[in-house]
Amino acid sequence: MKEIMEPDAPVIFHIDVNSAFLSWSAIRLLKEGSDVDLREIPAIIGGDESTRHGIVVAKSLKAKAYGIRTADTVASARSKCPDLVIQPPDHAYYREQSRQLMEHLYEICPVIQQVSVDECYMSFEPVRDRFSSPEEAARYIKDSVRESFGYTVNIGISDRKVLAKMASDFQKPDKVHTLYHYEIRKKLWPLPVEELYMCGRSSAAFLKKMGVKTIGDLAVLDRQMVQTWLKSQGNLLWNYANGIDDSAVEPEPSKAKGIGNSMTLSNDAQTREECRKVLRMLTEKVVGRMKKEGVRASQISVEIKYATFVSVSHQMGIQPAAAAPEILFAKVGMLFDELWSGEPVRLLGVRVSKLEEENAEVQMNLFDYQKESARSRKQKDLEEAMEKIRRRYGAHAVHRGTEEWQKR
Image (spheres, rainbow, N blue to C red):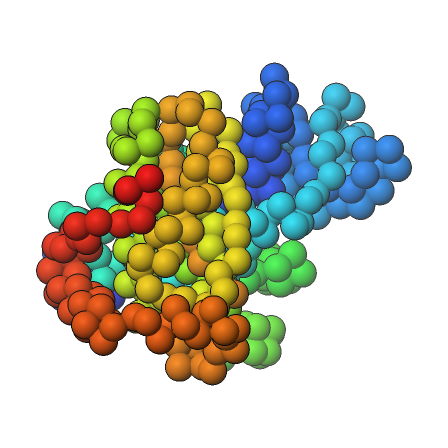
């Protein structure tokens, strides 16, 4: 009889960028005019090309075919492939790519737990009613990342975090795999024991010496015996081999990171008016999230990605800090008009940062005070009423009849 998942079991995604540092470096070099894609040649990220010192932190599939492994020394990698291309890492750039990716994923589902610069867990539950299956949702997420950023991710699906993590490591790149607890005998147990999550080289070597060659070999052993061999690490590995992991997706608050929304357009926007409509919608989404977080912002930025995949962005301060939609949208309009070259637009993004609590005291100058005092209670009531309608019926349920940027 075929096993099935319990009806109430949560579904969890593990999303992992395929060879993140190499992919991100490759995308940047292509944008800068390079005619070589690091992902398509024997290439690594790590060390220094001139000194050949350091280790491999990321590798292309063609470099892997030469036997090059992550954490190999650069000298060792070079000896395996004399024509190897070595690109030094740029961690500041990688952090920015990570931030953009996580913001993109947050827009799809806000229940995300980032676990490293290039991977996160996501709960399927908040978006269950939008998709016919977890697989459909994962394919949508995977494709949206590729279309928005130009690189690929793998997504593992399971009812246990550790199994979702293992599934995302199956065949790459740009793939979706399932590994539910009832699938471990077929999909997990035949794998070499060194492929088990958290099984390091020394543990794998010891287990092999004890006759444990596959994950399945480990899973059927007596737990106490494995724990005697490897102490607490043995208990952890035995649990993982048997798909035992009751940890949940634990999202972190987003206040310190800022709040942003972006959208890849189904058709490139050709006119200012088309872009304005999208930016207004994005600003309203940002405002909704700010209200939910109870914050206001003192900095706002706009991103434009053209049809050529060239990206530009610009930011400006907001004094005093604000959360009012008309104030933020006016700033968005100014930034867009400064940035836009007139070329077709593929993606637009709005982001606020330098956030503070909504009820925090604000230091205003005389002019700020006069403007704030001039705002009628009627206008404030209107804003609150509009926000309630949007929360209940959606971001498009109500719009202002006039806006400062629209008049220009």
